[in-house]
Image 1 (cartoon, rainbow, N blue to C red):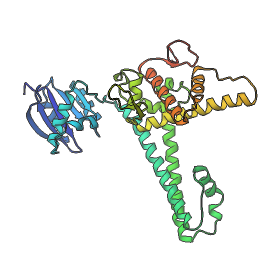
Image 2: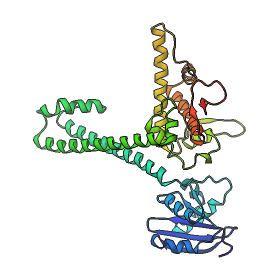
Image 3: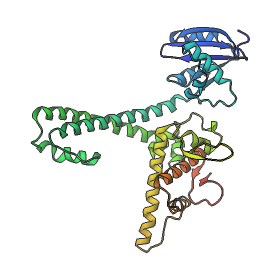
Image 4: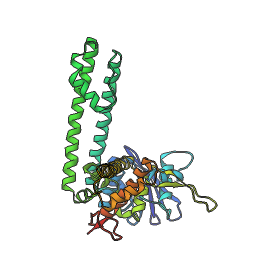
Length: 362
């Protein structure tokens, strides 16, 4: 086992299928471990070998435990590891593919996240799950009431208004249907209470975390977006620059260049869809605010007060007569780049800087 340089591990819920490889990629040994035999797994690992696993469920915990024993751990993105998997799929072949993928020079690895980062991420995941459940309950109630001729307009506000003002007086609803809807309404209110709890926890994290506080100095970015941005990567410094960070969130166009003829497509929509969605929502609010302020100044024949660089830049984008969705993506791209600079350095946002500091100050 002295020649082992790479250990490929295929993680599952209960087992760890492991292959020991030399520098040429030859498999010297393969063995299956259970999660309960982790100590035995640690003893069998060569001290100078690189441990590679796929960035799947439980991989970050696996990486943290190995780092406690001073091992070099690399997590391979699943979509990149798949290219090296054997046609005949089994657990040991998957482990070999992971080991081969980790040896490529151009391979980009997933940074191992801390327990704190994953804890904050779980708040956002739980909130999204509750929000989805809330929507399901609302749609179920709408469907049941529609069978009795009750039509509720789209949106949360019309729904709440009908339940509050008209539902209990509406005689069109059958007795048994009302019993069913009452149960769903009660469940809906419980979900709303849990959503409020999650929002309070996210606000608490944003208040206590210094990086989140700096991110919230960027216009349009609030508690949810700031705390979500710190969970994107365990190490923001792994990204070469702001463009790389924006690319990882799928906010840059795909390329289809051939024959020295550049061709840019739609945005790639790769990476974290949740954070990308939040950034685009922030961008839309900035766009609407900048546009309203400008229109209000024209109609009232007053001075345009939003003279900061960000607002002026947004106005220039809108003046090009391109679709507002494209403008939103461009603003979101800018927000992602600014956020990257704040994530990697102890700086804050300053909209009035005129130098090359990208709206940032120390």
